[in-house]
Length: 256
Image 1: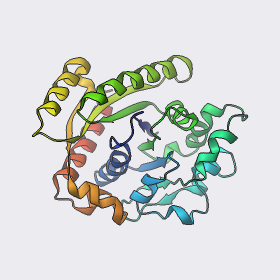
Image 2: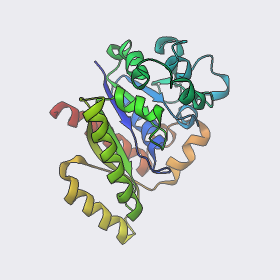
Image 3: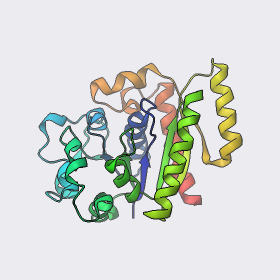
């Protein structure tokens, strides 16, 4: 049965989508069966996996509203070799349309339960806000992976996210926990990065993944080609870091 993880952070521009796409590709490379769920109306994870969001026959929008199921809506990423439940701008309308639906927070959980046995990992790319979509992701997940930059404002946003996860755990999903914090876009030349990194390790201990994703031009270029960075330039430091992170995550799950 699949381990379902949200890649979440209420702060925008912290590498959530980059992490979701590259972790999906990295896990696939080491023999894991992966489904990427794009829960962001911008559809960036869909595009980053090489899928044209303008030509979708069905998407996560139809799945959430009960007009389709995951098995019918999912597509294969040819460039990443994992499955994708894609998204496009239609998903923005789901926020309003789901308000009056029964069990609106758990629509995604029910949909994923039908295919969970087919995967080892299901990774959910959440939008950068605590919305009905993010809530669906958190209710469906066993845990949260938090990508964050090592800068001052990131620490402030982190406390808000941790409180949100605690509330969802208490009220809606008792299985939810923080799997770990992933340091991304890390620049070792900046003393602030090192200081914040040390603070994280002191405060969160072994919840901080040992893998660190460096700031890397090749990772930034890859989405414009619709190829995960892990496959776009496998020799780059960014790709190697995500491969190491995938292996570390698999190992951490075995110890849980």
